[in-house]
Image (cartoon, rainbow, N blue to C red):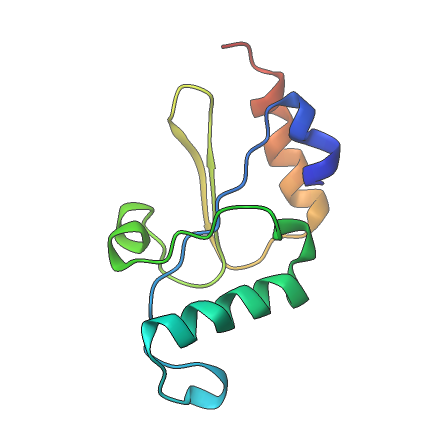
Length: 105
């Protein structure tokens, strides 16, 4: 989806926060956890491999993330048009994204 709509202006940001652990709740330093987050992203979300993953409590709070994943669509004017805790199908997400990409600046 990202490859298809990037030319139309689709941008993805994948914020998260430090939880203090990795696989099976193994305690981890922030650097160990960051490496684990990148590993999971690359394995589970390869299409996000080149996208930023801002890891901080501030970004987690700023974006209002309450669960993982939380999907937030922001229009070209910076207004939140969709806030969806949890998964969406690709079809549902495309249906929500297309009108925002079609809107003029």
